Amino acid sequence: MPLTPVKLGYLPLIDAAALIVAHELGFATEEGLALDLIQLNSWAQSRDMLGAGLIDAAHMLAPMPVAQAIGLGPALPETDLVMILSQGGQAIALSNALTTALRDAGHDFAFTDARAAGLALRAVADRPLRIGVPFQFSTQHELTRYWLEHCGFADDISVVTVPPPRMADAMLAGEVDLFCVGEPWASFAIERGIASLILPGRAIWAAPPEKGLVLNRSFTQGQLELTGRLMRAIWRAGRWLDEPDHRGSAADIVSRPDYLNLPSELAERGLTGRMMISPLGEIRDVPDFIAFNARGASYPWRSLAAFFADRIARRHGLDPVAAMQQAMAIYRTDLYRLHLREAAADLPGASARLEGALAADFAVPAERGQMILRRDAFFDGSVFEPPFAK
Amino acid sequence: MDKRLSIIVIEADVERAATIVDGLREAGDHDIRVISEVAGMARHIAEMHPDIVLIDLANPSRDVLEDLAVASAPTERPVAMFVDRSDEQLTRAAIEAGISAYVVDGLRQDRIKPVLDAAIARFHMIQRMRAELVATRAALEERKLIDRAKAILMKARGIDEEEAYALLRKSAMDQGKRMGEIAQQLVMAAGLLTCR
Image 1: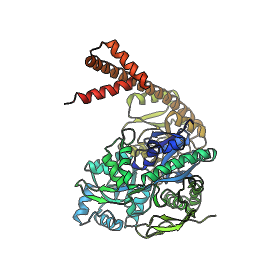
Image 2: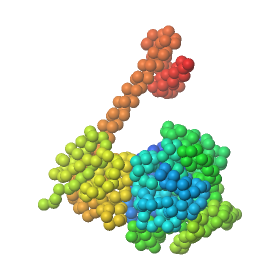
Image 3: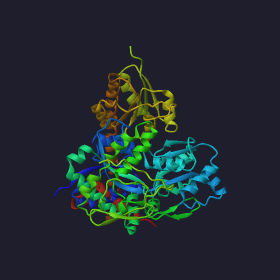
Image 4: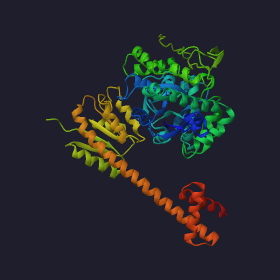
């Protein structure tokens, strides 16, 4: 049977691993697909190419389709996020000047306690902080703002967009004091001696969705069967990636010249959760630094869409209630159920939940028996309640 | 009489920028400026108050421009919303040509279209030129590799050039690969074997 070609856009990050592994290890072929992985240079390019149908599906920042759905973006066809591709995987890096100030003030760089790190930073920051994020509608932006706003920062932060491969240079040039980026681009700055890592994204929010698989609605509706095959191929790749024993090989695969084109040792840090946090060689082990499917990670909870929509709408002067409704409609828990049931994925009983309510991993009823959901607490203990619509 | 449009072209390659600017000049008497420097780009653009910003769709600095597109702070004048939101077809044509346009809010469609049409035509031209260049380079590289592989074979097996060529061609056919690939493998292996 001839393979069906599917064009997939991605950016060079370790969280594109499920797409790359689906292609390289035959999960796509098993579903009768020939993936054409197209490396892109920017998130805007990804969004535009998907909109024009030049790619069939995109590896995209989870908040991006939300922004698009609530009217912050160009006039492009409607999109759906059908599954989360990765959870976590981000790290926050500080300039050497701030690192020195924090060390002098006695901060331990434990890499676990967001409150302690934030308050320490508050105490030494004597001028407004300039923060680099990869895109204005990104989990990195939300995490960093959330963290700093809950640690006494207010108007004294400014956020600028910096493409991930340029983060280290921007810090070197003094354009930013701090940045939050997906791996391997934080480790890349450490390797060059330009920064130190203060927190993983997970220390701020224990289960932050990072990338999603986004398709045009015309595709998810018109090519139902093909959508399912693509989702299953990627989901099985994610299941393979969630085996700790496979993470080293995964680092080798994604680092190849065709993909990240970097030493695999860099990608390995994020994928194995063994992070070098400073040019001094200090190591911090972060179990589950990045997750793919495990413990509900790939389920596109509609409440996640609401969480992003609420924050983005408020920042841009839009009505948060309307925005949340629009956003929840494009995180397609229904398609996740429909297409991944056959792959025997765990399917939660609900489509939305309180975000941040789980202080520990928790067993919930699933379509078949039970499933374990990962702890998803925010560092400050807040809980986000989405509008529970019918 | 409409005022002249202020147009910014973001392009680091001087020749490519000139090609685009030439095309835009044919579309009307506009004030056209080229920015090639990435550092501080967003600030420069905001200061210039352009009506239209044109940039290669694949430019890695695209996401920086997105900040301007939805700027909300009163001091940051948004360059506004992309290609006119009412014309999906034009948006699509631009994307397919590999171009992104950021257009100031409220600019009339009949003023945007001639500029974009001209830009789209020029980007198509640039794409063709790029493709030609890539194809020519690849062909040249392959020829060089085949020449080196032939030399290696001639020396190692004491055969003449024609025989070496025939041998390469036969291996390529037997393995269902291009001669360039076989040549590359041979050159690489030979490099390893002669390493001290």
